[in-house]
Image (cartoon, rainbow, N blue to C red):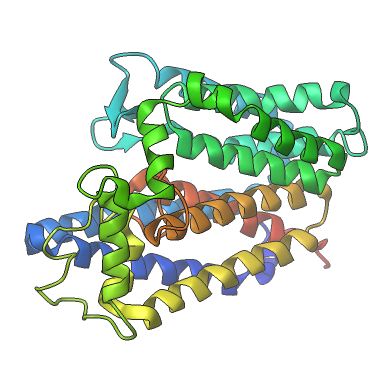
Length: 370
């Protein structure tokens, strides 16, 4: 890689990510205090290892011209599909939280759906780039819909509705930017509404139905399905303006009233311990991050690069809105983690790889002048 490309490295985006990760380290440590200092450090250490691997991944990714990924898009797509198939095989895929979504590699557990997000964004961007201006008929959309539909179906079979929704949002956002005829967008919305009774009776599983019912009225079953969101809202509200303090013992976090507090409900921990000020600071950091992605998508050198960044933007947008929304009762619980902050090696590594792709595209937005 030419050193002159490093002059185009988006330092503000990278610093924003590092700050979010550091907040994640502190939050994970605070969320696991009840397990003891040694156990808390082990959580943070695992996350730190994933972060270091992510930094290495960024270094590797920015050294390769992103157009090279476009040349091998079919191979990348095949690898993604094979990973998603492999995880469904008993003995290979590991069941966690009711979904067969992990592969145990011995040292770490890998979640193929997380890594597949990046691969599908790259391959879908390449496919749409080759079909610019040809997304006006159902025939035009057949291949793109199959391209995105296959991984979504495989993820639904795990079953992992949360990640399936992420893929749907990514696809919808990228199709919109690529110039799909708006009649298909509105038609899809109408079809979803009309087909909801069918989805409810024949597609959604019982626990997924219960989550939707709980979203509408969590107090319908306060000690069962509604327990998670009720405890989360209580924790968020109890933080008030300045919070209870990171290492206070009499918190809902430390007393383990919050479920999955180091992963899905990490934002509740932040809100309880640092209050509105700390929670608002995290939201502002994400707002800057998302705004920066939109800006960088506009200045990309070509449509392929722009579409990749747009796909990454919609991936983060949905995950941030869904995760924070579910902790305060504004979105149904889906098990979506908060990017860069929630505990999880596969998730953090995927997020770092995505950032590496954005930096790669941004660095190459201008021709090198000698």
